[in-house]
Amino acid sequence: MSAAPASDLVVFDEISKFYGEVLGVDRVTLSIPPGITGLVGPNGSGKTTLMNLATGLIRPTRGSVTVLGIPPSDPERLFAAVGYCTAFESFPPGATGRSFLEGVLSLRGEGPGVARSRAAKALERVGLVDAAGRKVAAYSKGMRQRLRLAAAIAHDPRVLLLDEPLNGLDPMARAEVLELFRTLAAEGKHVVVSTHILHEVDLLADRVVLVKSGYVVAEGEAHGLREEVAERPMQVLVRCDRPGFLAARLFGDGLVSEVELHEDGGGLLARTKTPDRFFLALNEAVTEGGLEVDTITPADDDVKAVYRYLIEGGDAS
Image (cartoon, rainbow, N blue to C red):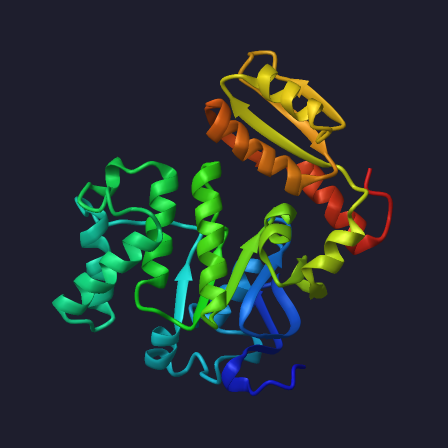
């Protein structure tokens, strides 16, 4: 346990959650300090359960959780201290980006003037000012994702719990959101980001918590985790308009060990041992070469192999 006071930590103390006979998480003890913490694990590993426990949306079977010293049994104080961006979305019919945020803030007890001001600031921080007056129903998936993030940060909470917050974002929007997370952490906030994509944590987090099958199996600084998997290739699926151009560029820069072009001519699967440089080159191809990218997805099989390598210590091939 950290020596920092509980009033400056998110603390899980021997917490367990069972859904009938199904395990959610079991005997998890964590102390999360300010900064960026990556909560990493395969889908279904217990990441969302931990976030729901921290926000009081579900109650533990045993154990306890406090957020900055606030228990879930004090929902008014907890509601003010925490911003939660879930992996699910639901917007009122006919709402615009601006009206949705103002409505969320009004539910938090803000008056009309404060709600307008805070909504405007949140829209600016997530890059949705130009789309603020448009109906959310016309937003792209990435825009809706940024709007949900805006709803989480609009009331200026000290703790942000973000469940798969980069899903659906294009490379430029992803880079902007990552920079926003760094800014929020520099302001002294707790930014807890759940993901099943190891590379995102390597780019972002100060520390990493690895979760598997409801248990915390490892935690520590992100740099140490990266060193452990430095020799493991990462697979990345890219759907774009000129996969041949991208493959030639990546090979020319020595950033991939293998590339498979899709038969339909609309993408490729690349294997790289230098994901930081790979994604930087991909961003440069978009901005400098005019490459149009539809999808960037780390391949699940490779991600699971990395977890086997880290968690089980066996052969991940």
